[in-house]
Amino acid sequence: MDVLVEIVKNLLVIIILASFLELLLPGGGMKPYVRLAIGMFVLIAVLTPVIRCFYPGEALHISSWEWSNYGAEQQEVLQKGSELHSELIAQSNESVRSKLEGQISAIAMLVPGVAEVDSKIVLNEDGSIQKVTINVSGQDNNGADPSSVGTFWDQEEARLGPDVEARMARIVMNMFGLSEQQIEIQVQGGS
Image (cartoon, rainbow, N blue to C red):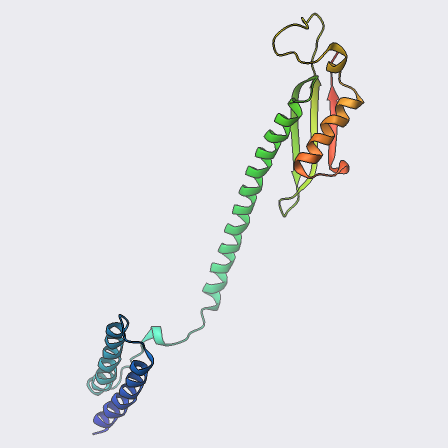
């Protein structure tokens, strides 16, 4: 008799909640899904006391309805997520660093008198540029024909000097929003 009383109580609660939900829902495509969910709750409400009657010693738990503390597992997942995040940031910073080095080298090559450029960048942890070191080699114009194709400047302009370094520093500062303290230019060779 207790089983029957429990079933009736559960059904009454579910029917009252179901009718309240149906009143709140607008008429449309959601009603069939709500009715399906309510039907599942009715089945659970009827079957749970019946199963308890047949298996009185068993503890029947529906684990998805119970809250449990997954502290150790959660910490492990969070730690692995943090490690993965750090690895992705490091890979991203490395990719950005190598592309910026190439861009700075290409821009510095546009300055007249520059033959080769090798740039190195040091990034902060947040990915911003901390320091740029530009190694520059000047062109050797001894014996070069001034009328040759690709020569757009004269012999005096082709020599590396403080004006070329300053011009290169200004170009890089303006293009990448850097300050003068962040740029170091090292000149090697030249005529």
